[in-house]
Structures are given as structure tokens and as C-alpha cells.
Image 1 (cartoon, helix red, strand yellow):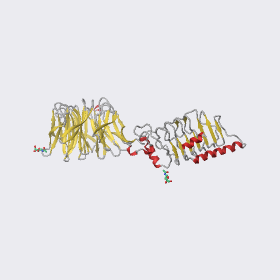
Image 2 (cartoon, protein in one colour):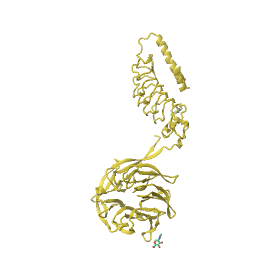
Image 3 (cartoon, rainbow, N blue to C red):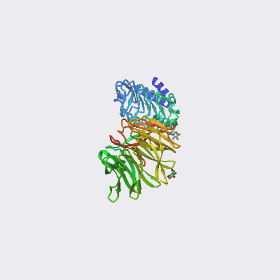
Image 4 (cartoon, protein in one colour):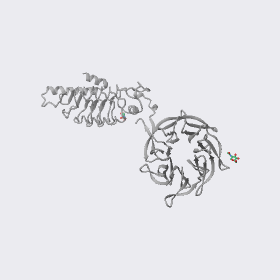
Length: 551
Ligand SMILES: *[C@@H]1O[C@H](CO)[C@@H](O)[C@H](O)[C@H]1NC(C)=O
Ligand SMILES: *[C@@H]1O[C@H](CO)[C@@H](O)[C@H](O)[C@H]1NC(C)=O
């Protein structure tokens, strides 16, 4: 009776099931008293009737049994694994009891072929995990017990094949109550299956709580990730996406292959492909500008001067249309392009001792020198921002703190407005906006990098981030998340995520890009792509993905 008692405990309301067992016993008694025509096949470890087999200490799943056995009990078996299709030779099984064994592994499709199985008990074993395909094919199963195992979670969809399950027992397992269990709670709420209370085990937050009562709305199960989408097998030092004639392109400065490389986005393959090359033997920046439907590329070189090219639609080629004054632009470092009152401008930051950061203005068929902004300061970067509707330039330098210029409409010139912050030796300055607030990221190669906030007429320091060998600190926005990438020439790049509550960036993810030089999101519909040019390794194209941890 111990087996019956145990089953009675498992399913207090399982009177139907008791009748079933008694029925089996009744069949068995007259069968033995009658003169059986031929005893059913039965392995030495089992005792059998015409319909049932009861096996103890088996070394494997008993093979030599009548094909039409409807009830099999296997206890104290001397093996620990149930393999795929282990019972396929007993297609008429309705009752399978595997309690009190040492089963730790149950393979995918372990019960394949058991179309008529109604009762499956695998209690008091050592099962730690199951795959979602474990119970595939059990169309008739009404009772399932996995009580008293070592389960910490159950894979989503594991119960899906069980169309008519009425009783499920998971007691005596120590479930981890995290996002992975969310589906089970939802399933318990929506299904008509009776499930005796199960409690959370090893989760600090919910230990001892009933799984069915977990506050699902407190489960934060959505997270994001950057994964490598495409590896471009070359080094590059700048990467600028642009849209021209409804197609998406990227311009990359590739000093190692002496060119500005233009790649085109292939919407079918969802990859960047070769498009064209502009010769540039020491390219440091390739800046595409689409003005009045014409495509220009400003090619800045470390040696041999800088040039402007135009895409000639008659011959489908880039042609050089003008030189950039090599007296002023000696060692270009960065180019920014923007419009003020509908007019196109670009500005080149010059990092030589004798050069000067200069502004150029577009006029009908080319760009003309408009203003020398900042001489003799070895400028490292320039950023265009509009704050309170006023166009401004922020310039960082090796020899002084970052400074701000403001556009004067009547003079049509930028005029010096003041300093940004008492931070010397800034390598890169980048702007970002959250709601109506303006912020700057100031990266430094030596010393800590900073995030500062524009308040009133000044930027005040918000956050200091340890950085070493940082050439880039780039804020960027992808699908409503404000991120910031802090690159390093010596170790990993850290991606930070803006924390609205804390009003600062918090560490989010590490990326392995060797000596990154930028992190640029690409304006693509339906896909979030990030370009990461690398000075020392492959240029990487990352994809931003949303991950639901409850799946
Ligand atoms: C649960 O039972 C009700 C009433 O019998 C039925 O309408 C409903 O569809 C069942 N739900 C599921 C998920 O089977
Ligand atoms: C712009 O320049 C003009 C002429 O120098 C000056 O009078 C005016 O105040 C300036 N405007 C601003 C907003 O600085």
C-alpha cells in the first residue's frame, strides 16, 4: 500500500486514479487464478501480469515486456538517464511510475510514442533540469508529477504538448524565482490545471514565497545587448553614415589602405558592401556632406593636404573639386558639418601648433573658407550644438580647457563666448541631450573623463569616469536608450547606460574593440546598428538587440 499512499498524497483528489489502480489489481487477481494460456514475457527484475509490470533494481529500461502493457512501475533502478524514445516499445502505456530512482537526466522526446499515457510520475529523483522537448508527444497525459527533485526552473513551453493536463505536482523543488519563472506563473494563472503550492527557493528577494503569488509586474525582464553583426576586416579611424539618393552609405577613413572607403548598405543581405574608394594615403577623417542633393566628401589627411570630392552622377565617380588651404589645415583631427539658417558649413579641427581650426561655407558649387576660429592651440575636437536655439561650437585642445563659440547672426561669424569647464587636455568633446537638458562628454587620454551638464550659462560637472588611453567617449541614442561608449586603447570599451533616477551613466556592458576611434549609430529603419572603427583591429558593426530574459 505504500505506493498507493504516496500517490494519494500526491493527488488528494485523485480518486479516479485510485479506481484505476484497483481496477488493475482486479484484472490481475483473476488472471493469475485462471489458467493462463501463456505467461507474458517478463525480465527477471520485474513481476508482470498481462497488463502491468513492476520492476525493481533494473539495470536499464526493461525491453522484454509484452507490447500491450498498460502500466509500468520502475523503482530503485540502477541507472540515471532516460534516453530519447526510451519507452517507444510500449505504445499502449497509460500509467508510468518512475518514483524513487536516481534519474538525473531525461532526454528530449524521452516519452515519444506514448500516445495513450495518462499518468506520469517521476518523483523523488535527482532531476536538475529538463528541456522543453522532454514531454513531447504526450497528448493524453492528465497527471504529471515532478515532485521532490532538484528542479530550479522549468523551460518555457515544456508543458505546451500537454493539451489536457489536469494535475501537475512540482512540490519539493527549490525554484529560483527570477525572470525565467515568469511564464510558469502566468501559465498557472491562465490554465485550468491543478497545481499544489510551490515555493521559491534560492532567490534572496522572494525566498519562501508562493510562486503563484509572485508580483510579476515587479519583474524587470527586458534588457538590451550589443552583439557583433558584421566584421569589416580592416582598420579605420572614422566612420560616418549618410543617406544619399535614398540609399544608406558609410564613409570610413582607412589610413592603412590609403583611402576613404565608401560602403553601401545592402537592404536584402542586411550588410555593408563595397561601393567606392577615394585615394587618401594618410586619411584621418572622411566627412560626407549632402548639400542640395549633391554628395561631397571632405577628405582630411595627416600628410599631403586635404581635399573636397564631389560625386559626379554623370560618370558615377568621385572627382576632386578643390584643395583645402594647407597653411591653416596642417594636421586635421575632426570634421563637423551642420546647417545654420539653411546654409551648409563644415569645420575642421586642426591639431598642429601652427594651424588653425577653420570654418567653411557651402556656396553653389563648392565650399569656401569662411572664418579662422582658433589658432595655435592644437585643437583635438570640435562639436556643433544648438543650445536654447543658438548655434554653438565647442572646441577642445591639447593646450587649454575646452571653449565655446557662439554664432552671431548679424556678423555671420562665431564669436568666443567662454570656457566649458576646468578640464585640461580633452581628447574628444561630444554633446547629448536628455529631454531639454544639454550635456557634454569630455574624454581624456590621461586622467579621468567627465560628463558635464549645461546649467544657465555654464557647464557643471556631473560625473567623473576613470579612463586610461581614451580617445573616444561617445554618447549615442538607440531605441529610446541613452548610451555612452568610453573607449580605451589599452583595454575594453565600456558601454554605459543613462540612469534617469540617478541622473548619471551606469556601467552596462563591455565591448572588445581594439583602439576604437568612434561609436556611431546608423539611421536604419527596423534595425539598430552601431559602427565602431578601430585603429588597430577590425572595424566592427554592432547590432543593438532587445532581450527578454523571461523567454
Ligand atoms: C478552463 O476552463 C474553462 C471552463 O471550462 C474554459 O472555458 C477555458 O477555456 C479553460 N481554459 C483553458 C486554458 O483550457
Ligand atoms: C553680434 O555682433 C554685433 C556686432 O558686433 C553686436 O552688436 C551684437 O551684440 C552681437 N550679438 C550677439 C547676440 O552677441
